[in-house]
Length: 457
Image 1 (cartoon, rainbow, N blue to C red):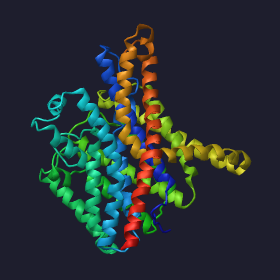
Image 2 (image 1 turned 180 degrees about the horizontal axis):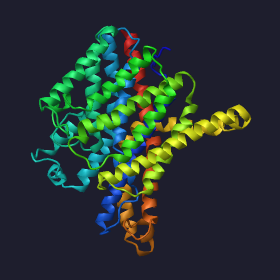
Image 3 (image 1 turned 30 degrees about the vertical axis):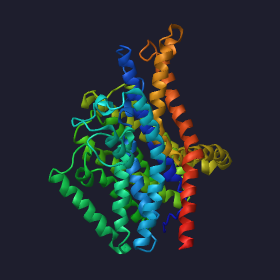
Image 4 (image 1 turned 45 degrees about the horizontal axis):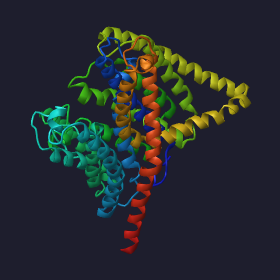
């Protein structure tokens, strides 16, 4: 089996995972703002979105592994050289920056309107070394590492992405047979830098960026793409099922964030299963066996549902989380096996009934692929939507008759459910609008301009 993801070619499995990754991050930030809203209103209840949602930041780890996979896959059969490297950098940066500038600009206008000009950085209290607003904003827009997070907080991950692009462009200067050694050397440098104390849980400068353990997630994705491209396709279905339960198990298990979990912890707990998940799904898609998604999805949902029933937060004792995770994974594993066996048995005895399910399954797959297409816009726009909705809920919640629905922390679940649904739905709608009317047209414009320049030369 040979894999070469050409420009314009779309792997549905990868798009599905992009959609899942973006949704995890959306739920994570929805829960964070739900918690803040409850505290602001003097409530003492726990956020309705708990359980695995407290670890929804793992969507970022999945994104990083996907980035590494795609970068290798789309360049694997290209001729090495300066032109290939320049074309790669142009395509990647023109995809990242325009959408980033749009939403970072919206956020900047909002912050400058909310805070007095000249006091924004100090008021945000994100640095112990105050500097003029304009320097902070310029660095944010250019995605340059600095002591504080960018003006739109989720942009910290794009700083890593831009670094990945530029560093990988150097690999594209080498013959393909040298790639494994270059990537191994890159990984060894990251480990050496970490052991020398040059990295930290938060990237604050170029040095800590170069040696961040999260770079290993990109390298995992790159190694996965090289395995697939070289024709290694070992038990893709089993690998995918195991990786799904592995990923969900750690989403359940992980507790409070520490320096370790923000570095190597997340790399091992989320980066490795993400790579295995991508490997399994891509090999299945190339073999036209994406039906394996059904038992994997059932197992994941059962595991999540059982764990959610425990109502645990990140501060729950480790022993309690371990017991709940074991029970949830066992139930999810049994559900996976039962679904797989039922599907096989039905396929042997009632094939027409099985085929009757295909249209519905294709619609679900198409919806997830569509969400994956808009995942970059979703990742950037969702915090803006969530903050706006929290302000709106705060205003409406002050009206007594509307308090049961809009006042976070009000007795009952109605307010919590309404906020969660509004945030997720609003974020998805905003992302689809952004993708359709800005991100995709901008991408087409840059591709056209690049082709025009190349033809002219």
